Amino acid sequence: MKSNPHRRYSLLQADKAWGEYAHNTFTSCAINNRACCGSLEAHHIIRRSAKSTRHSPHNLIMLCAYHHRGLWSAHNKPRWFMAWLTENRPEQAAWVEENRWKIVK
Image 1: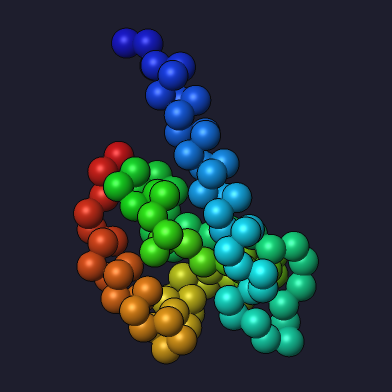
Image 2: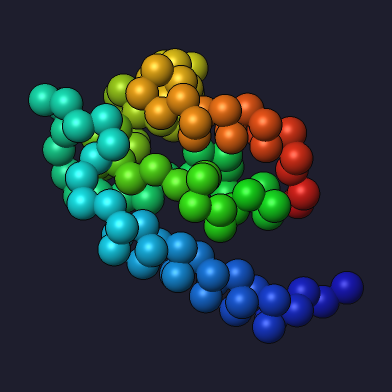
């Protein structure tokens, strides 16, 4: 079965709009400590492949490059990141816990 090119285009457009929203709404790394460095990057707390939560503002957190992809990052230390989120953004952490298993691929 062929993939629908219009669906792919719509997904890319939604990704672009989500990223623009992130960069227009947030001006600094959410973790905001002395280790912060690099450009700001939008991070999906629940993975991007989860279509039902992919573009939700609740699934968005802005991180510097170090906290997004570095040694102490959301991708490399997910347990550390969720502990940080629970302590510093309890409402967002609660949303993640509620929605993390509502995954539609």
